[in-house]
Length: 202
Image (tube, rainbow, N blue to C red; front, top):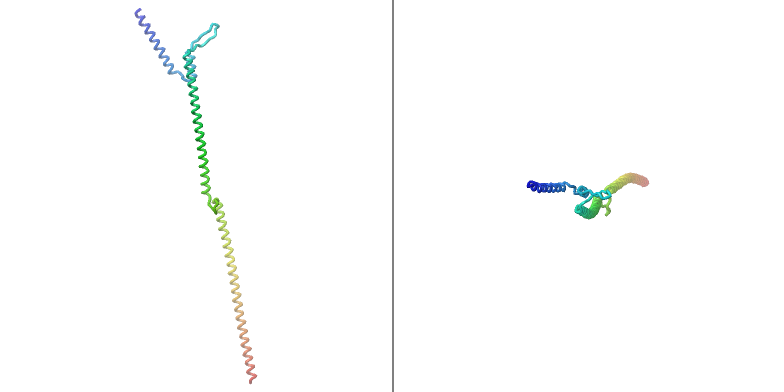
């Protein structure tokens, strides 16, 4: 009997510690998701059959309240996360819009700089280098044509001047020859006249 008094409290203590350790182990290994909590609550529930044979599951009210509280906490946390994510998304969208605007400005500036780099100011207007080169070479070609034309005209004029000088020299020579011949003829006639006069005096 004395042993029974010692064994009974000892058996109760062992049972208590065993169930406590099992609950601790179960709580440590249990799935803390909502689904896991419902499964845990169902596992801990007891069966009950009514008088007409309909089976029921009996759940502790504290377990139900705990799961309900956890569900509300999860929903509130989800709402808070959604709100935070919405604020983050809104901030990111504003930042993306700002970055897109800056990118567009940078692209426009780059296009302007590229256009200015590839262009040359010609009489106050920006024209492309290709057009500038075309205009420049056209002007050079036109000047060369004018130069060749003036060289041709100069040579032609020089040739005509040379011909005119040559013709003038020939004309002067012919005139000198004619004048000399006329002078000789005049002198000859004068001598003949003098001779005739001399003959008549005799």
